[in-house]
Image (tube, rainbow, N blue to C red; front, side, top):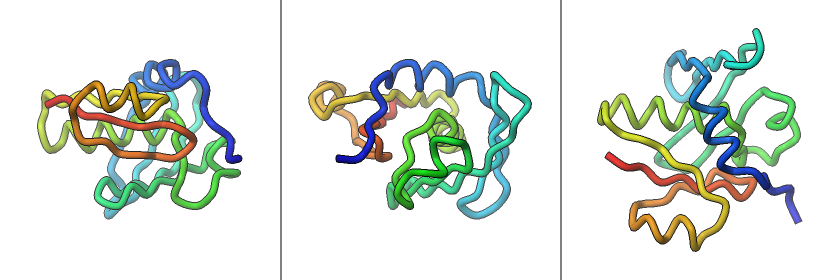
Length: 116
């Protein structure tokens, strides 16, 4: 079984401290809020495809990364469409279903919903 992120709410909280810059197309640069490192994220909200160059992301199956950097990009993309949008991360299908919002599966057991 693939690795699952256990502390999904911690990933969500951590993502709120990252700075995201759109580099063009589906590529984003994410400056970590807890270090001086910058990671490259490829993210497609339509296809549910995400990769990251962080230590966690380097070892994930292609297109299935649920790290905090990807969650930060998802928040950035949602806010570009609707400035008041908020992305929330969930660790189970049941928790995500309770939100009655559309879901995006990132991989690693991370499911996102968006409140606009």
